[in-house]
Picture 1 (cartoon, rainbow, N blue to C red):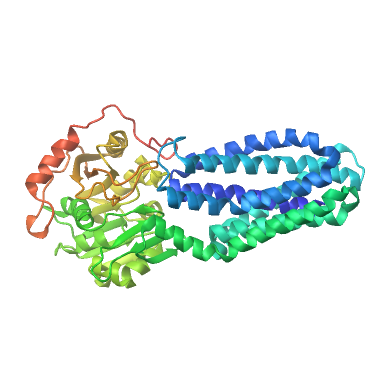
Picture 2 (picture 1 turned 45 degrees about the vertical axis):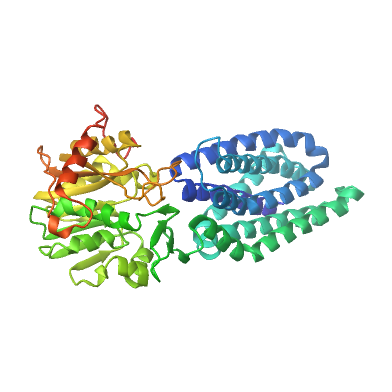
Length: 513
């Protein structure tokens, strides 16, 4: 009985983590998605526990039915969510869109079924061995909590890296239905009615058949869903451990597109325009011999930095070594970045940007280029904090400059100007500017905020320097193909017109994005 409780608890926690992980990958903003999934699920567990009171007279049959239903719903949840995401075109809106409602529906259903387990198991334990209620609760909860520990550790260290989300959820469902069926049919067969003795095994076998068939088709399903999301021209699709990296095109004259966890990076003409706007204002018009690039593992920002002949050393800090390998060796991506990683001036570190800045010597760099995820994505919020910019200021030489991609100005002015306020709080004087996207409706924007669809109309940047004097926007025009000084000056004025005064700085303990 306690072993069954242990296994069921482990499976239940895997279902919870799988929903949270899937929502974070596909929607973004992991704190919000985890809060929604877990709060809905815990609420549903309470309702499920209350509902199970009415089933105690038929506890064995009810427990078998609950485990079969939980295995089917939990095991198929990842595949169903991915299918809706792939074939409905995204997660826009809040309650208006089907995928978000389906996520909440799965959280509710799984929570109801998990909540019904404990009361039914408690009733069955009393039939095996009569003991005081406190002792029975202690035994069952001990098995439940230890099982939750095992499930919580198995998900990130075993299921996700070795089986992936789809097959991992299906395997968990299989274990779930086998454990529940073995308990009911092995120990409590005499408690079942004649009808339950054949319906429960039939239901369990049906669930196993569905899960097994889905596992056999998981590879074909994933390829079809990936083509629905990214188009039929998918060349590379790998999960590196840090994120899912997808490359489309890039050979045979087809345009290269890069997606990181479903978010498209700039492509085509926009790729050069975005990276020129990010890099050249920081390096033009002042000595920039030592440069630090935070993020930018695709090598496109690095390509622009190396076009400045005065640069003697470039340190690239990218937490995903798998993306670096692709940028070095994939023919399409390596051609796009001009084989920048082959340059002897380049030194690569696979580390977290925050940790790397903490270890950087004072005044070590003339320029820091922050090519990081959008501040609206929770995983990147600490990289837009006052503490982060304080570390960047310490790493800058007195004449140094920091440039930050701060998200779209037009559609998210509050987040953009919060970044500016945070830079000022860290002792850096920012100069805002924006660059319009050539293909603003193509879905080629750098980092879609949660709920957004397509690319932003513009990209917002902040060029900052230590002290109180904002650095001027200046370009060395002979190196550029998409920008000029006149346009950049006008874009700076356009960005300043969106100013949002009075915003507080964002910190690690009080994120404002």
